[in-house]
Length: 526
Image 1 (tube, helix red, strand yellow):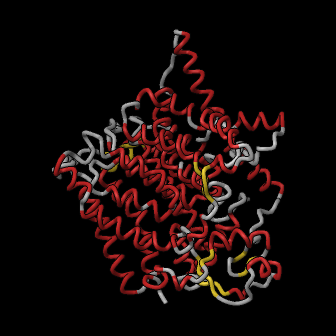
Image 2 (cartoon, helix red, strand yellow):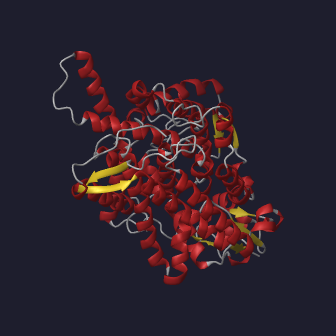
Image 3 (tube, helix red, strand yellow):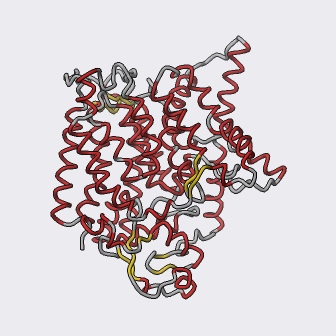
């Protein structure tokens, strides 16, 4: 939702060119396909068909309305994204390679969360939808002791819609085909985001895939401090203070690609919209992929209403834009279906409270918070704030990043890890734009102050690469030495192989007494 200079090439023959409205349509359809698979496969036939028609209708109306201003006037359709072919090819190859090395499709050594991702895809293929587990199928006696039941059924609840197109094809052609498709599907999402990000860089630039791959906080600094002191509060690379963490992009791709890839694409579409009449659909789609990310994008969406050129207008125009049919119907449909689905497992967020209340000495939260902000937020706000200090959405993103650490939900604090994704990605868009601009500067500034700023800028860029490089070292090193990535530690949520996973699975993925919940009583297939 920000006016930017379009990227141009001298001739359409010299590069890839797509109208902005065409890109919006393709990206929105990409995000909507898993929704349609879910409604078709999980809901009662009549409800699923109705919901599918509604979502298709919302998508079409949003696409047709994309090229209109806040007053509904059609804008000239001469706005497009143009990229030289070399950038187009590099973007496509980078998306495929990045998906591959972060473990999508399970073709390489994978990091700690992948046993869960494997189980999700496998169970969506092997079980009928909705997925229901029978405690009696658990063969590990230690698992049975932890779960505490020998019989009875539980439902599978998680934000797994991203896997559903691959799972649907896997039911026809097998798990191997599903993994290949998931790799391609994930690469398409990344590729579309690269193209969308290029829209905001004013020029074709390799800074786009670079920032998308390597963005992180300056975690190298606390990690170095830990290497020297071995202080007890350190848990993992991005968990250097208790109860708070903002996660590096590469780490996110390695563990929760199903949340972060669609989240980043949603932010791109949100930034491109020229009116607010489809705001609830665009931002609301995050509920399908990551309920936590919705918390992070809501302040940005509210802030976008205040923009003069691209906001909701004034007076009756503002009311009509905010209460547009697309916004109202999208909110009802998404909350009614996916909100009720996630609420059926509300026990998964019982571990929550103000972050300082989890400290043995609550006052220690203050220095931890200050250090965290200095490492994760301040450098990037300083790099981009001058250009965007009057941008309401930017201000809302910064405030969100400063506010999230005060509250904790779940042991690892999913609120900060995932709720921060939209705001952090907005900073990434602006950082990529700044890096693209600075990469064209040939001469070193003569003024000492300007020269120091340039050095500081590139020092931050270099330091932020550390988490990705460390994870790459683990992945490639383990792959070369033949280490196993624990592919079958879980196997299936319906028959858990290793007991150490049972408690987490019971808490995060199982719904007991599911027939008493709204979703399974009224919406889900029998």
